[in-house]
Length: 150
Image 1 (cartoon, one colour):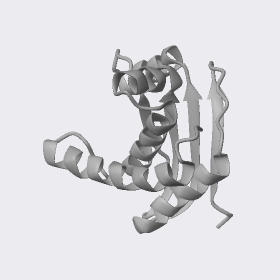
Image 2: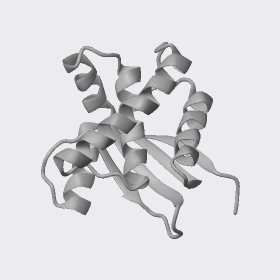
Image 3: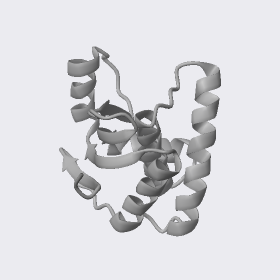
Image 4: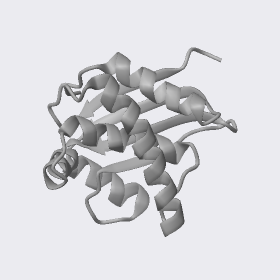
């Protein structure tokens, strides 16, 4: 297998992602900690309208969201996927929850990654477990970044 890779792309937005190496290491460590192997993971940071189009086209949902995850894995316990994130939703949610954009973006990045790791958020119990996992991994990146921004 080739070296695991995490990529970052922009679609229809201007945004400068800082600390990419730190984020790659954090996501990779989370994947390994959960007992999976990382093949390839792509984060696409985009606009609300771009993500709405994806939501409509692929999921038949007609509403705005902050993240959509596509699992492209072909091997069990191996992660290959695309995670689309609306920067506009992230910025709005950061204000709404009185947090930083960096923290909110990391929260959504790990949320999408946890979906690829098999975690769900449809039932109350599943959502509680996913939130606990998010909080755990966020505590690791928050201290590493010092919330200086990403």
